[in-house]
Amino acid sequence: MTPFIPFGPGASSPDELSRQRARHQGREAFYAGRQLGDCPAALSATLRAEWIAAWEEAREVRERLDDKLMREG
Image: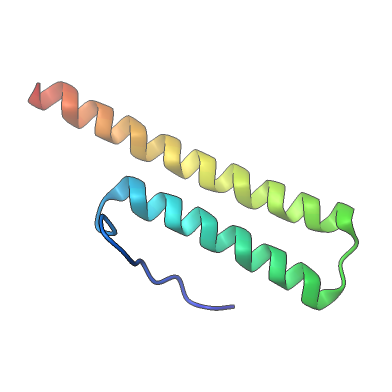
């Protein structure tokens, strides 16, 4: 596995970090499946699990940002 390294403009933003981490995890799952020769169903299940985890993380980030904006605005 390769380490997750944030990059580009906005990389310090929690939303951007979450998006980049989700893309990284998806790529890792895809290439790990290709290297191991997983069948498409197993790969699909792995990617689905990674996507769900990334989606939940992004939802938490959005909720925190919404709370912060409501307190400030």
